[in-house]
Length: 97
Image (cartoon, rainbow, N blue to C red):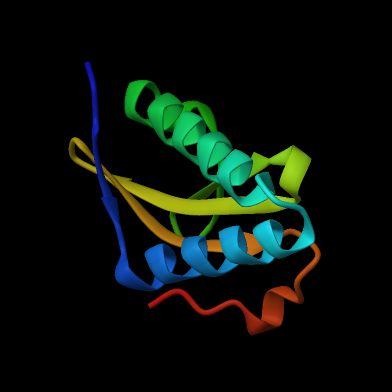
């Protein structure tokens, strides 16, 4: 069974921002980040419950190479991507609307 994916606008904006940061570090790295993100999303479509709940019904999968976490919830047959954060960011600054 495949789940639907819904990327919140704030998460989509953050995805673009982080990809641009990686691209500025090295040409092509932003593209590699997007590929890793897409691969993680494909994995979530197949089995979003494989990651444990971390807080407020929110689960997190990590893009270890990039030090980024994808924060999401699962409701019915949909995975809602709420936010994307660097793992080293101060969690007190995280806002998920």
